Image (tube, rainbow, N blue to C red; front, side, top):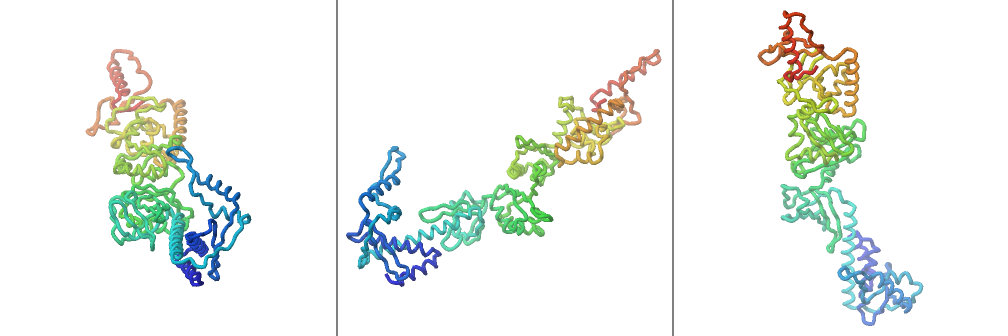
Length: 527
């Protein structure tokens, strides 16, 4: 063998990016295969190649009989297998001791040089085929090693062909990836020579080389696209903590900032929405909601239901279930088309979410006593059911679907299961605001409710119960149904005095009638 072949082998190694030692081993195996095709070739042999001069030697291994028998038994034991159909062990035939086992006992095996003078044309052709095969195997292994560690990474390819089964992407020279139908986004069209971004889903070995499967449906596509467009994410200042996606329709991502002064939502949106617009453009118009991550589940769930406004969130930590109260007009927004919005929010937060209308919650609270016992629901007349500290009912009209008006103090009565504003009289202003705050946690609200109930019980014990005006005792109301306050009659808690003479009989009758009206359900007041 001439030195030119060694130089050509080194040039090939540099061109293909294959380690030179691997090509030398391939050349030695090729020469050994060519030698084995020669008549009267040795049973056990190896080839040694001098990389400087290009000379080679064929060394015959004179394996002792006892050692050969022992190595054959070991090889049979290692290569035997159980037939899955019959359950019997199958032993290999024509057993040949591997070169690795012979190398382990090299000191016990005599050797002799049996290098032939000329391999001939057939031997050279065999050597050429073996070398080409080893080069192809080396290229496949290198390609597999390159992409096996890049699962989940974004790659850009050029569409080579597309049909109803898959789309073929060329990643680089002689490297192609498959985009199967199951990983394509419904409604997207892939044209020839179109540049397309996708994430590597799976890399596996096959007879024709590594099989690279890419995806456009995977949620990691959203994460990878934002990493490309947002420098703060690439630098680690902003992190995407979660992604929920329905490919082709809508996605929600949760982001958090690890640097003071960096707004995670603003960084992802970009100046005038330029960054998120690039991501939406790559996804062919898929809508994206960017949600700030919060360690408190209630606030995080409320934000995840964007664009709907949330009044309250009740958390069940054991069941990981959240009950969300939204205004009546935002119910459809919270649920989304075919439940899409709440479904994405549940995936993003990891909580089961149950959405209820505010009117239903208020009605349920109004029909439940303070101890949780069911009471008769007051029959509304269109007015606010709240009873002021003066004893009169609120003159405002009730909100649609509610028994109270829009005053935050009156709406806060829903949490007490009562209609008396006197319950809230001793609360400071900041606690009243907390009761009306939909983002306030249920634990903090319960503390405020408990303090208010204790203060009210002490005041009732000292001053007596609230005296309530019966505004319909005389039956005089104006045109819009509001009772005339100046004609209202005070109904005391004491029993009616007994008339001393017949002249006061009419007064007794009027007083009794007023007492009956005060305890009736028409105005919804309670003594």
